[in-house]
Length: 343
Image (tube, rainbow, N blue to C red; front, top):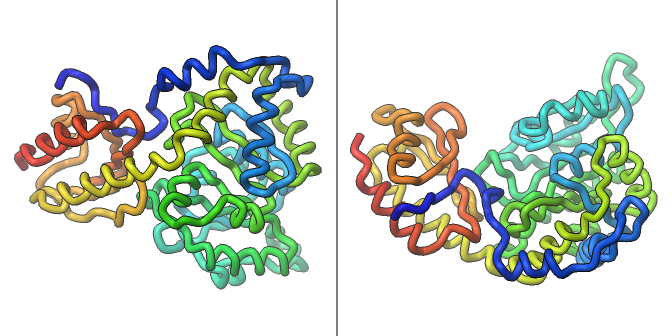
């Protein structure tokens, strides 16, 4: 097979022909003036799906997360999140750089912590030496933990804690729909639990760009000011928003196919002598550790020689992510390659 098999991320997908057609034929306007009908339709659609009041379309999930943090906290406040959280590891130090806030890291189970963990880490509001705890953030699914899914019952318990202590509750839902197709839960169940939710359209859903931030009308009004200050206000953004609308209408249920292929890869890996450990595969992300017989750089090189790309995720650690451009034919080719690697 001469084509590249790219498993570095689900962000590498290309628009389908049907998605491209939707993009090229959609009506557009100036979104900064609120006049792009396609952007407005995308924002209304996602707000309605989650039962939330309003939404704002942004270039990236990093921007929607960072806008949420910026609106929810002020300089010197503290954000509670897991040590594996995307907002902490992969957003360029944005919590400090954009909002001048502190972070309290929790050491949960594969990126998921408990309500008791939150209770134990809320600072004393009367202690002038401590940063004020103002926000709790969770990521679903947890990228760094191999696409792990949160238990909604634990989220409900955390919500009770945030309400009691007057804390804002934000979800980085970069791959939330991957979780929903597995659990059978509805978007509205999540909309009831959070002050703000970030939904990424350019990962498993396959749009080329864009994320949407959801919240109350007052929150989104402030988010628009912050988006402008962050340089994220766009003009005829409807061309891109149309891809998001198409993805929501056509690419949610098919996420199960990605999950099936991810599990198939894990089953092949389990039988290979160079594997030390594989994180439980719940969705479309496979994170595994190599034993000492094979270095991560050598493993990636062996795959690259077969036109297969993966991500080095740490010492002896590899990540692969399935997506809509990864086919059964590619799975068969990958399987043969994994089985042929000699320590």
